Amino acid sequence: MAMALLGLSGANASAAGSADQCRDILIYAAHNRYQSLQTGNIKSDLKTAMCNGTSSSDGSSSSIGAGLSVLGYGSGTFDKGKQNLKTAQSQICSSGESQLSNDQFDQVAKDVVDADSVAAWTKCIGSGGLVGSIERNGDIVIFHLQWIGLNSIDSTELVNTDIDGVNCQTIWPDGTHVGSLKLQKQCHGDAKKAITVTFQAKNDSLTLKSPGASDLSPTPPDNRTRREKCLDGMSDECVLYADDIRKDCDAKYSQATLAGASQWRICAQTTVNVSDYVNSLTAKDEACKNNISAMQCKTAEEFSLGRRKVLTGEGAMVSAPLGGAPFNPTPGFLPPH
Image (cartoon, rainbow, N blue to C red; front, side, top):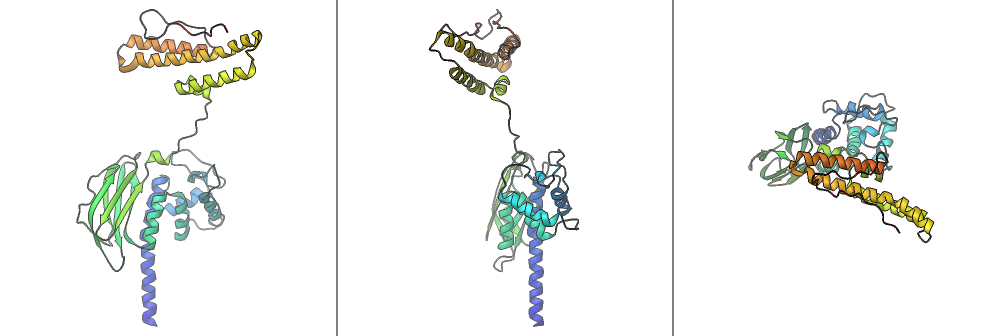
């Protein structure tokens, strides 16, 4: 019985040690995702982020009543990750502890880090073998790699490594021994770029991925109207804007009568002004391309600005100046109906 208890105690200690090693995967992934969460006190930082609000990774201050917007759940659908976090909050934020427990951290981290890191953590916890993580701090990238006992095999040997997204062509050479002692290699990479590395060993293989900063910062929604986009120089939006105007004119005025046709032409004249503006944008791009002529470029820019003012009602119709500027000098008008 004593021997059995000793063996069980040893197994529990080994499992706990393995869980701690695997937890590093989530720790580094959470740090990479939220730079305000530091690896040294990440359990405390994460509780603060959930319960009190903190500064988001882009430096803006987030006041979060439920504590979720800093973790990417401030708005949008009530998805599974958000639901899991809200459930955890009722327990975590009401406790008197200053930081998350290991189990709480594991549960929360799985809902706020990328799916590839969760998959690597799951493999590490479930079966062991070749495990590792990517730790990022700005342009510094540190790869971690080790072997956690699998089928009584206590080590392995690398046979091939493929890497993309970081300036570190050979992390470890083929034939490198990988055991329970963690290997670490520092490389230089671009914080904006995603990283993918695949280690092929004699007994196992492992693929690690880390999204770049640009992937982790969602593009804010563009709430400009189609007209505003057009006036900002987006030619494709101008075409759609002109089509919207024409449809609106068709709906308001019947061209079956003389009065209706007259009103329709006045209404639809704006579409021609839009077309003039688009043509001036094209001419400006052509005149300014490769800086062939600074004078032609400046003239084309001023003319395009004039056409824009006509569209906004800030100026009168303008014609192109003399001097061979590469654009049509005649503004458009709708012909009599």
